[in-house]
Length: 157
Image 1: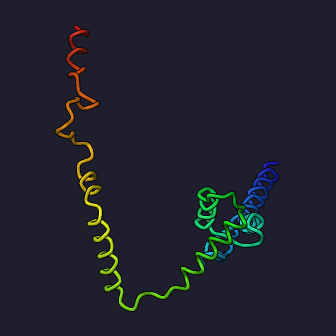
Image 2 (image 1 turned 90 degrees about the horizontal axis):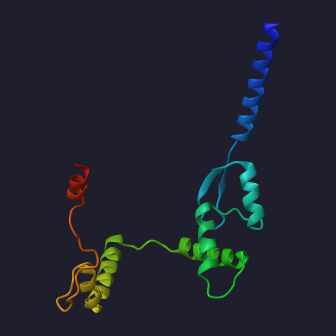
Image 3 (image 1 turned 180 degrees about the horizontal axis):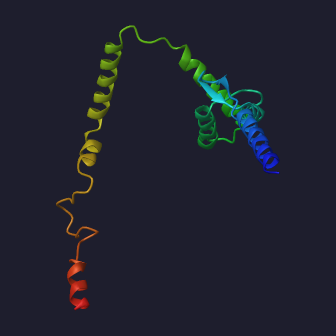
């Protein structure tokens, strides 16, 4: 009797592990937008392809497509947002790297510096965001009234 129970338990655990292995079977799939490769289960790949009309879209591009739908001024469909995102990705991946990355970095830093010099008022406001101005006679909005610990110790005696 105990031998059959033991063999049934082993058989059940072997069946469960076979199901788990079948569930954990993964495939590499490449995003149709950005070219990123991911490991995913066949069932997940199928669900994503159903959602995006046969295209495999990675999680990052999926979020970008959803953001494109939300930020659009006019009402656009998921297909239109996906096409727009795919065009952007194709344009980005077709760019060649700059011939001299150091020169490119210096030019970018120069452009950032020029922008910051064009608007010195915003820079002054950002340097001290919580400091009161001299013209203001109002107290700070969150003034401390005193310690609450002294009142707790006095009432507890």
